Image (tube, rainbow, N blue to C red; front, side, top):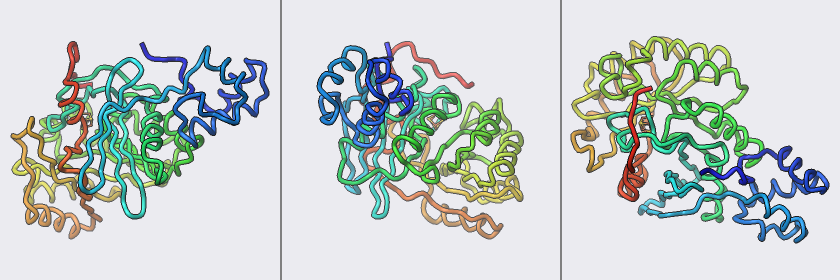
Length: 353
Ligand code: SF4
């Protein structure tokens, strides 16, 4: 059972209501919000400027609701992968990425993932359930509490799960990150395999975040071999939704392209990608495959092939970047730590949406 006692996941206004319900003044709710979201408190006892009597009464009905840290893997470059345990015993992964100029955290939005991408450890482990908004935000708070020296500045919704399959909780979580935790919306990136209806809806949320679309192939046939949801949503439909997103938000998406040697990294794929994107604005971000023992039928292209692919896109006028490599040694690609630590678990199913 998931906890509905958790304070994490509630807005300041909702926390004020809780305090009013206890016969307290509304400002106690604002104090509570500061402890929960700005100071990443682990329990009510830490909230030293709240009178003990209030904390005791709160404690009869509520708890902070931070996930617990089950395991941490640290890479030499400072990347850390946290395996977090949720209230019902499920596990998700959260990756802490400290850079010289910023601290980024990659968070999960579902326990497992129904999208079933063939190159992804999470996709191969099936789907258990959606995460609540509080559980999604709780990842940031748990990691911030564990690593207090630097403030988390950037959030990427690119961990386990397809965010747009858990739309309402994800949008609520993004609003909490912006308004309660204090992350700038421009420093939040939501990555999706491309759910046209979700992209259109997101365009109208008035959330100036960055949308990243995982393309991974320039045509529907190849894409469907890598991402089962591509059988349902064709590239033309996804790109039309992106165009609408740009028109409504005036913000350009980023197109993610995972490079798999001998699968989608041929120069003809680069030419086709440039063509299919046409005049749709947005940069391409190339992600050379991160090898996983369990999926060793995929390989990472060599640097010459990556450079050639990039060159073709650049020549076609498409700004093309390559994702900075972090945490390769701790298997930073999503789902790998959960898979080796807790396994896929019984009764989980992978199903293309
Ligand atoms: S890559 Fe993302 S969308 Fe695809 S299965 Fe993995 S977690 Fe799900």
